[in-house]
Length: 347
Length: 77
Image (cartoon, rainbow over all chains, first blue to last red; front, side, top):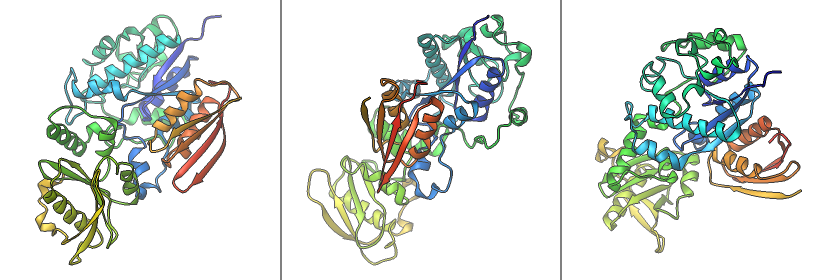
């Protein structure tokens, strides 16, 4: 009896990876899923933080995909190793700070390491030639296979018939004529295949699954790097960029303003690390101050805090100020009028 | 049988799932893991992870902003 081949599928939570894994499972291959957590994943975080989003289903789409497929899903923390991909992408960035090609090479390489360590035979991705402008092009497909070290062990079931035969086809683990030849940006072939497999309620792509593709997020990360004078970050940095309004009223500091209860509660977890303030005479946000802060900056930040409170139209608002390492005190301030907040302060 | 506590408070999903997964990988079938969390997303994600790996969620308790999930390790790995 021939051996049952084993494959690991990169599962993002989107439709393509779901279909790619299923296509291979249809041919009797044992498939398990792998999902990489970079810290920039849109999945989960902002929905979890923002209370107003609580009515939305909070499922993790990669886990949902694994359940639909009936396979195990291994979620791998790559936060530390991924920094080099973000900071020094060999192939450059996309339209924002998204290093998509380097990211794909990195993830396929991690999957290659995983199959080597776990005795699996090949790797599955949901890539489709022409689907994405940076990482899913005819000329980048061989680059990913080569630079990841996966080579012929990388199978793209949705467009395999547009590519040279992979090891899985050469070995007879997969029949080429039961793979697909999808090409281009159209989603219709995937939707038809999803219907054929009975997949419904799959995640719809809405701006990608990575914050690095988001223009506003990229502006905030660029600001963080430029004000610190070095391109570095830790997990807290990149989490905080996802939360609240960020305003930089002076070059030496910025404020992070909670927009609602869920964000305020999340920001509370950072109170020990930052000078922070909160209105006490009116309902209002928790505000973190990030930077080297003078007494004049505290006053300005307090007036901004008052502006974003329910006391925005009051004559005076009392703000509790919590400096790091010294006693809490209160300031009574006039809320900063909207027309005195330049648009350029908003990041 | 042992009981292992995983402190995943103040972590956002999927990190509590990853911490749980890493802890379970070192345990034996029948062992119990208690995961302490604050991200409400865990009430969906940790049970989903347990289902695909064959582990049993024995209880989910919510207190104020804290969520405690008890898991019995299955034999599926």
